[in-house]
Length: 289
Image 1 (cartoon, one colour):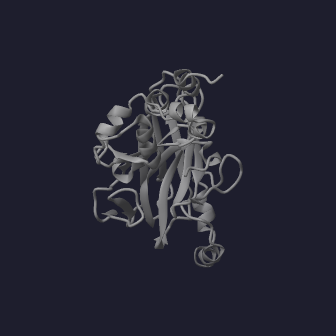
Image 2 (cartoon, rainbow, N blue to C red):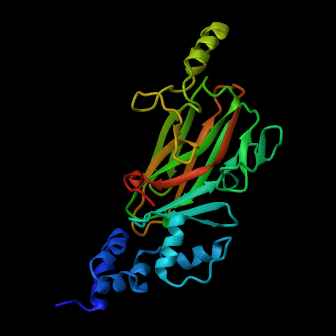
């Protein structure tokens, strides 16, 4: 005996988006139930209408809640194109990318320190390129209430290193993710570029043990005893992990994320900042298509 469509829809609403997507292969009843607004509204963020209204494209002609869900999977520019919102197709977990314009970057309004321009493979209209500074401070913030509850998140600085970069590998920067309500502060250190052994040899030749003296002002390896540095991303950019935090049901506290290098007094330049991504730490387990 075949279950009624409404009953199947009720069952699917208690599963996952991945199950709802695959339900169409079971039978025609499951396909109809799996396409229903009742099911897909359960998987959408509670503030999905607000997110749509904040979109620069002002999507207003969706034919179904499933279509809205698919749109969110493709990502949505919101808040005057200063943020990018996205959900994982199979889990419904929420991610954000805060653009460089949405961050607090010391001296970013001074053209002698930072240059703002459109980068061809950026998600946003502007990215920030460091010209020169001896005081690097990049900070961002997000409310946990805008994220998926009961989820482990990581914060990642999205950046590039230009061919003319300098002063990035002398002293590591300090990273921090501070959750205001709990007081949880996840700190670490990281270099701003990958190790180049030839450059290291040249620096030792010209500067002797200056690097060792400078590095005494800050820990040179992470808490795990390993040198931390940028990692490649599938989109061609690099990312530096700033730290991690947990979200809780009903919680709406502020999370402060930062990368600073203010102790080395070393002039540095040649990094391009695209933003900070906040995403579930298990996201790489899923293949989003």
